[in-house]
Image 1: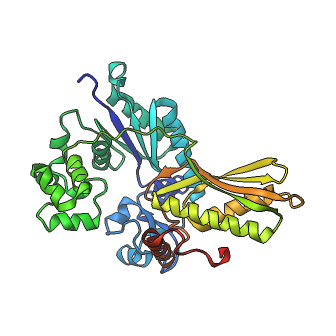
Image 2: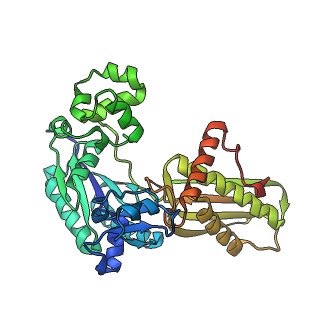
Length: 381
């Protein structure tokens, strides 16, 4: 079809587990759980062998080991995972015209028009084989006219497979699948739909859009469109320039170390909240200092993907201490987070306990309801 879109969704299979197996081949074929140690820790990722016992991500580790007592538990290393993620991104970006890095282990590619010269299916398969050959990581992809269908197709292709949905075949491909396969449908939405007799996508397809709008509002319309294979969302090019930042200019130039530290803590806390609210992670920190004579200096460091206050604050303070000249008055300080990606790995599941995670989620709920300054660290007051 002239002008048809061709969107590919690449997803690294059980990414954390796969990286660990590259480091330790004895883990191959065995149930593996990546996450923190201890009864209060949670599961970050698990192998397909562990999933057969009912284990899944974000499950309390204690429960996971009750379900699968023979599982090998690995603490995980986000720094190593980030390096592999960057490598995969570089391989894809070298070949694909438009790439969106959706998370640490997912990429969307817009290869529309390539069918005239090479063939989108053949091109996608060859890129997948190159990634596997150069990294050793298993990866699956789905190819279709849009992002929603391609992501669902990738899920059908797993583990380590390929799936193509031709233009015009979107509805028939989706029809027999559970509505849980639609991106964005969580447990709450699934229960809501199930209580109304909607468990398969075909049922949702056959319902009038107005009925869904009345029942669920605007989100219902988007859900109905996805169920019918309608998604015009563009692939947003991944760029290193995507960032968020905060700066503070002092009313009076200062060398008060404690005030400078408190200011950084406050800015990092606000930025971390913005990251989590937008379901994003950062891989790069930059600290900026402007002195009283207007000389401005910056220092940057890459970090494992994170959105947690402690990780960002530790990196920020380390940069600040390396950058700061104690003999000069400071006029302005700033913090920038860049190399942002969206994704579901919003919590450091290797180090945080379930209690710690719940605390952050509760604090964020309070801030979302009453404003970002409703809860702040005491040190910043």
